[in-house]
Image (cartoon, rainbow, N blue to C red; front, side, top):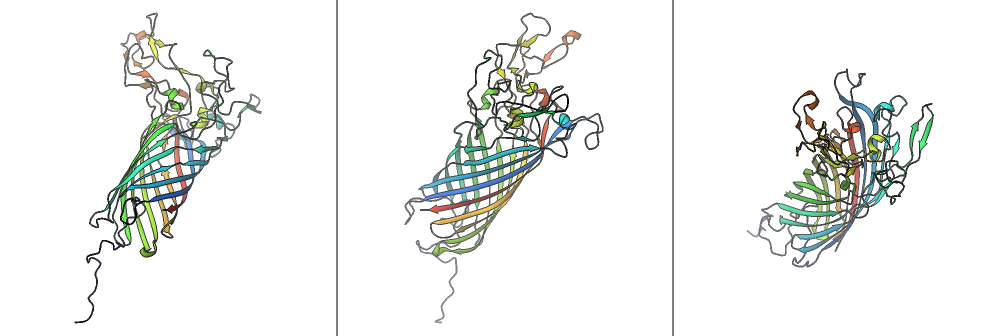
Length: 495
């Protein structure tokens, strides 16, 4: 009768008793303010990320050859180049508790180095092959291999946001922890511009290598790539020198939500993340932001996240914890105009088929004869900027990480990940925009032939961003076998 009774974990607790194995993990944790005994929280962190991406650049072709086609149809199997990109990024961040389960944050992702390069793929850079893989209009080559972009560095954007735990398992053990957050991303400084690190190398009629000097980061309207404007009324005037830039020239909105439920030593979680981007007129998006453009917005990126955290060790009284995190992320990238793998080579190309401008719109033929619609010489000229219409695709990422909270005030995290992108086209502009149909402005976008006595019906407006040498069916470029490996680490000081 005097033996002590067993104490069970579900017995009533005092208000001050800590709820061991109830606090949410890193994914859904939001710092607090105005809690009992903890009126104010602030976290200062410094993160580092390194990623290495490789991919194959392929092109459509009708060439009848082993591994390509048997003739009579188009395949996208022509080897063009091997693409490689490496990025090092430093991310300082400050989180400030505003109220219970409500916090604001600001972060400043700084790109320390971004390097891009194109090299030959299975001999595509050899004489006799490179002229086929990179053919433009008859007698021209779009760019040469190897192609090296200048290294970029600088502040990517300023991010500010708010996170809130709508539900918190530590406060109500019957509920999961549910986080919801929004973040604004604001590009600062010069946006990215298409550049070439070295003069384009070509081969003369005698087969001898020659070099053509050109401005490293030429203005899109600098058709001679020599720092002077074209003959459109500014011949001989000089451009303000452009740098390579580092940010995307957008204003972004990130919306994310995550839910987790801890069961002693494990905490499964899942959620969604979406990024909406809105182009700025000051970037090269502004040059192609026209009514007739079929696609001129950045892609919408949405992700589904599933993962599990494992907490094998925890010492609540000394604020110690070890957490392992395994995560899967599936992401959908909608069609959009973007800085794709050929941004620099195409944007910096001196091939006439790309550097010559297109007219923004057509008008009714003043002569009233066939053709009924002709170029409007008073409309805006549009130039190739390197931004291209990228088709929709999916990507899949798996990652693993570990977090060690060493004390009440210090925490460290590190991990690695792998991402694979589905094959997709990166020069997919269409010749006509079917959103508006006008007989006066239809240009070549019509069915029927008046000269043959056939009725002419407009099918849309000519897309001024369309370039047949890279956008026509049979000439488009594709990205395949795209893989990215990344490492990440961070340290947090908690006050």
